[in-house]
Structure formats: C-alpha cells, structure tokens
Length: 162
Image 1 (spheres, one colour):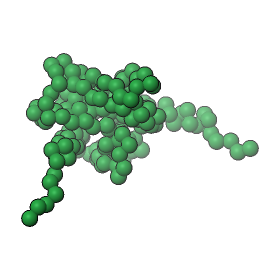
Image 2: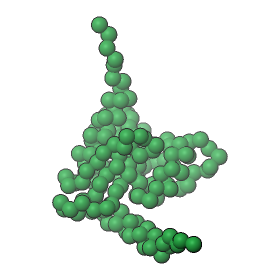
Image 3: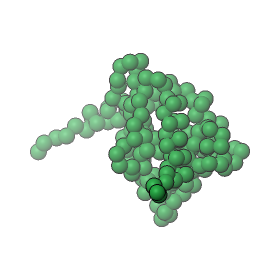
Image 4: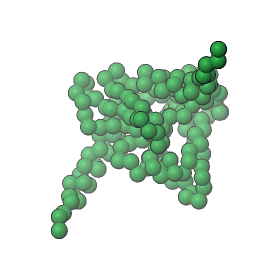
C-alpha cells in the first residue's frame, strides 16, 4: 500500500520551528498563524508569568547546508518585506541551518528597503547573530520601546468623529 510521504522541506520546516521555539525563554510562547503571509511564528512575550500585550513576529527560513563563514542568506520576496514592514509588531528574520543545528537572526528594522521593481532580494544575516547566544531581555526591551512609541503615536492621533 502507498501512503503520502512527508517531504524533506516539510520536515526541515518543522525542525526549524521546534528549534526556534526551544530557544525562547520558558515563559514565552510561540504559535504558527493559520495562514502564512510572511509570518511563520507569533511570539507572545511574558514578563515572568505575567502576559503582556507585546508580540514578536518571526519569518523563519531553513536550509540543510550553511551558506558561508561570515553570514547566512535569506531570499525574501519584496512583497513579503513590504507586508512585514507595515506590521506594527517587531519582526525578526531567522535562518535555521540543519547540518549545524543552529539558527541566526536579524531584526527586519536592520534590513535596508529593497528596490520595489524587483521580485525578490537577498538578506545577509551575520553568523555572529547566533540564536543560541541571543539576549532575549535585550529583544524584549527593544519590543517594549517600539510598542510604547507606537502607542504614544496612536494616542496623539486619536480617531475624531466629524
């Protein structure tokens, strides 16, 4: 009897999600959105055991083999970049390398805007941004800063009924 086969790509995607989730602080949670339009994982940030209203969005890529010695590559569509850039939450790009069982990260805010006349563009993630060495408190502080900046802007421009 023949049965459906799980592809290597699906297996690699699952391994990369599990790896990323296991790298998070134990109090934080992550989940995959039902529909993927560039957001592979949504991370809820906790303050100890207390839930917060802060989220981190993750675009996760994976490959079997490493690209190079100094950086890893993510090819991203310009439309996905635009979609992620317009999100109010902080976005993190992560590249998982199966042969190393390692991942590397970069905040989308550190990526220069791509030419809008291209379909895709290439992002270099420094291998010094090893996910196993990330300071999650620093990421949490950055998310807090961005969150409160956006709340202040929203409060300054409250909806006015005519």
